[in-house]
Length: 470
Image 1 (cartoon, rainbow, N blue to C red):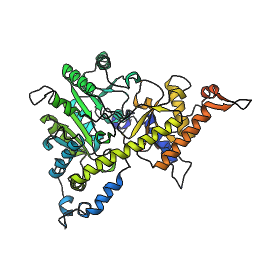
Image 2 (image 1 turned 60 degrees about the horizontal axis):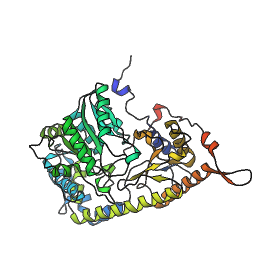
Image 3 (image 1 turned 30 degrees about the vertical axis):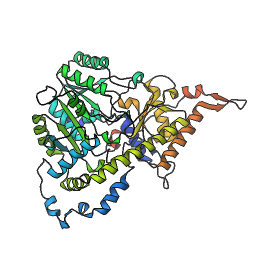
């Protein structure tokens, strides 16, 4: 007889996804520019490590914040004692002001409608707990962040039904795709409770158009369901078109507390991507629905942000000179680094979806597949992980409907390491396509493509490490 619960023994966590398996291979053989130059380069990690110097400079000039002092006097004991789970008022005010600043102050946020959570993972799961029951469903456009299979489904018992988007229009959401997803859920006898989107998109690295946002709002209004907009990459938009929050579209549509949509649109935010602070575990839910705010606040007691973290960040985000400079400089650096990746890919004969945001590119390697199948995609991916020694995320892990797309991150590694990764990839593609014939001439190596080694992961469930963030 099993001594553990069904939840503890079930395999619905999603950890067997290739997204997470690639991490495990990286952790066995991580690249280091001195100690392990032949190791696997991590390009599956959506972390923003480009602007730490700005934050560290501010900390050096503001020792009281990091030293838990106020006007030179220690407040350690005050912060060490129990804080109620509504959060520190000063931090909530600073956070909503920062959210508005990122959105060009076109919209404002009321701190009383903000719920603090331990990261966006907790925020998304909490919202699903509030909006849906086990056995009900949310619709999500593909491709989507692989961790949603864990965050939204594992503990809530809620199902994800994909809204299938394609490369024919840059993976934009269409009315047809929305209706087909809704009908697919109905055929499975699933009650749809809402639509969840990431804007800017992970993994596409693009912002949603006003047309898409208006389409979504019209759709959810017609169906009488909710819309969750995960906007944790809102501050990473580095080129046009600019970022448009769903809250801005609500305002343009003159939605207010008397509108049926007022209480059915919810925003998720985090400082993990915009400030590059995933280790601080700072997330938030913003909702105009008082019942959602009340329930989510109660649930947040299972994943609070420490008072010390809130105090430090309230001081940091309240410095408007810092936030203005950081937002501008960080976006410039992201643009330069993305340009460097795109250039390296082009030199290797590889293109990508035109992006304007995020910490990654959506890369098109369909021409490298031996066949237009997901089996061929996995063969190519394993070859890139084991032979090229780059950890990238295959499109199938993001539920992409088309084989051959990959997410490649660029903001978590140095320029030197990025250049090395592109050098490896270019050499691989060159060898992959062109080998000399008996006369010394170059020829396309179709037979090589057909005979890709079928790699097999030698991973047991027991030796899997904790899953990473997004």
